[in-house]
Length: 522
View (cartoon, rainbow, N blue to C red):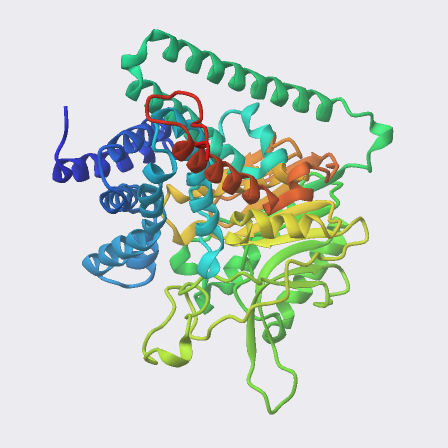
């Protein structure tokens, strides 16, 4: 039954909404596959131009719902009225929907035969996600590969091809299902062969995951560096109080008190992003108190804090979102400055060309400056891989950091100014970075979710959201060795090759599915 284009738009909106249910904050990853399957089937009867619109409306629905946590940032903390907040959210979702629109425009030309869909659709989707992660500063939030996050064995293949390989694996069953449905008239053998092939592939990947988990857990201790004991502290300071100057004393006292309850010994104590929401240079008494705490615990305190610098008295001050490793000396020299800043949250893009009254959604009137990165943070027990807030969502940047020889990845963040659905989504991305690079991931979040993962992505400890607390865990070392860490974005060449192959086969092989046509004799 042929459906009208107008009705197809409605179905595309519905499919995008269904796919949201497969994200880490949703009930089941199967919903992602079903939403993508429906989109692929919707595209088949329509032209590339119409396909672009269907992909756009799929993305508009998918991203409006998947990024709905932005409403909390815009309305509650940004002070923007509800209507304006909704319009900004939908506008941002429309911008991100250009990538599914590209998928919708190119899928049919690259897979003119239904049996080519498993070859073209997963590769094309991954290419559009890769573009979304890199173009215009990038926004790699909610890639469909994160739908596998709850399947511990399947996520292990991230050490081969990263989250983009998991995205390919998420789209593949949808493409196979669409091809089987479209080819159903050719006989039951099509269904059987396709289903058998998919089951064999999933079985092989499950087996790989089991093997990797076993080998990582049973690696001889003699071949590994020593473990460290790490304590993470979650202060759960409400966002509306976090930057209030009259709350600074209470905030410092809360972190000091929580940290003094830790079971000793510990090697490192980690506080969240901007846990100390003030400049230490202007508050030396607080710095002295933290130095005293470090002396009591016999361990350094790694904390987030804003910092300020300038090269000379003639130049303006530069502000940074920083991570500082504080010990009993009280020195501020061990410092990392965030390099991948949040547009409109930490700085205003194209500031010189925009009206002066446009301000950030977050506290403070001054834009943050970008620090050098990705770079390690030195520590006498081994170099730390610092990641502040959403720096952890960019696979290639974390891979570059891992290639500097760091022994641990540490993500400090403040998800308190997002809605609740952002917390499990952000945590899922952080977990995948550990698997991709085979390095432990230590995460401290102001309002949660704070957690520690080993190099296989297994959770070692957690502090639930929206409560103050601490957790101390022994963190085993990671090998830091993975194919993804070595190859990185070379995988994009493989996806593009699959697209070229699909397009070539579609032109070479006739619609009846016969053998390639022979060139005519002269």
